Image (cartoon, rainbow, N blue to C red; front, side, top):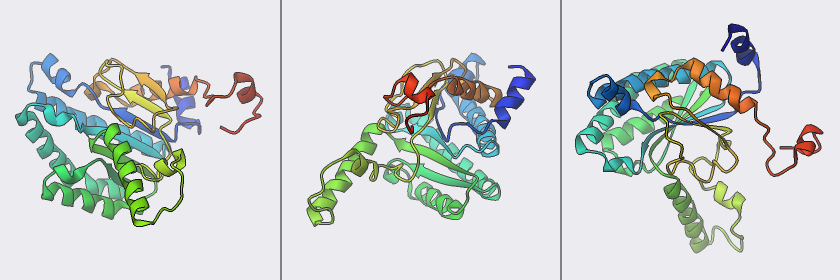
Length: 255
């Protein structure tokens, strides 16, 4: 993209409020270079830093990263162990940096499967950064869209059983209030790197009206210019939310 176009993009205030990313391709990036998959995951962490920095700088409100899915436990035991160790090391190294840069850290997913030490570090990171306002960085860890919807229904059922919810009909709003992202706007832009074109059980409820962007770029090679290309694609689309183009263009509806 020419420099002038990038400058215009950077100065534009109409960036998506919430970007959600499946960071795919670490292992393949390493294998292409005849390196262990672990090297690819380490390179992927460096990309995370760059993307977080960009989003904080350009007033994106929320960045959600799919770090570890509920299906990823099926990977080879050695790789899972490595990912857990990398997760812990990254938290230990990055939490203070996030705090200094006014970035709030949040986790979504079933964290009970993680070690007590890792759960404690996650809770500490959330507590330390809870009042920060520059960007909310949401890390989806042991997360699945099916799990999220199920746990929302479980919470509603429990409240009905105890009488906390009485004679209240099940509605979209009620379910939204019990999802793990209840305090966040739904994603405006979904990005998946690595060439696959599916959402892989990620934020299934929340992605209902999200703009989807797929790229063959492997995650370690996905840089700030790549993100700007995705945002430029997002801005070129007309989001109608069920309305007609004429309604949107005439501003006769509120989206």
